[in-house]
Image (cartoon, rainbow, N blue to C red):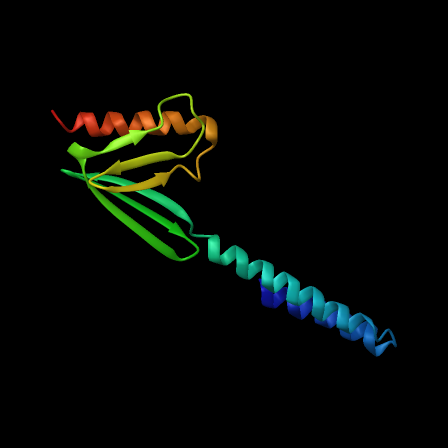
Length: 127
């Protein structure tokens, strides 16, 4: 898509440059550079996300941000999930001396529901 944008913009700019409007070409190059930088920044964060998986006795939390993957495993019997309902801040999952904050990609008013869902899933595995 970016290549087609470059071809069209450079084609139009080339036409006007050929007609004598020589200042068009530098501005098109500047435009394509800025748009390319914006696409690059977007591409770095396009796969950002959080993954929370409960597998048997382990709670696995994976956070991906700009290509950096942070992974934490917790024994589900020792996990604490905070804050309590009503608070719109990030949810802290902690246990065994480690902690991670989740909920960046969830609207603040829905974070308490996510915390309740995690707690319910952890309790549900007890039997």
